[in-house]
Image (cartoon, rainbow, N blue to C red; front, side, top):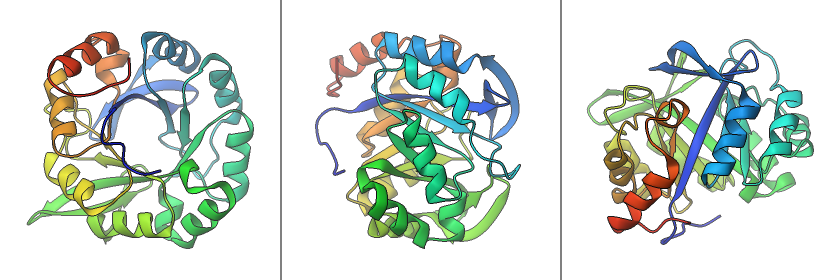
Length: 255
């Protein structure tokens, strides 16, 4: 998938734990935000462009993603559905695609075994593979890659890793700033801009949206899509209102 210079995407994110939608701050303090099927159905009806579904503790707890929940979500959603969390093998990817997912987000396993990206892209196609990068600022405009739900610092440079993910066949980058996640003070524009300029595949900005202006800022620095959770889960911002605001401010979005 190459960058689309026109239409920007709005992507609600459903973080899942124990078959419930949850939301925290800086990857901690997870609070219940509803039933995943009901929440996904609402976003489908409200005009979201895609939905991302992440099992936030699957890698840490060494278990697979809940395919039964995803199967029920896929029945209710008629826009692209991305799923991730605990993806450890090509069989895991096949299982999720088989229950109705359109794209698969891989993170911890890809960092541990970069060849996993090559293998997955060859078997399922680059357009199916989303490389998720959880990044944290470690000083001097440097961001490290963290895995297992933000629990382990790999010491790997996030910008270099984004380039490698593209080279190995990832079709998109899902870039989450751990520093801004859930804080609602805006995305980390520094790393968003740096990654968007470094790769030729779409970059999804994630972590920190609190206002409509924050989402526009992410697009202004090069993001191709904006992912958010709590502002949508708790009905602080309606997707239709957001798209109207973006269009009025010169950002092309899908109606």
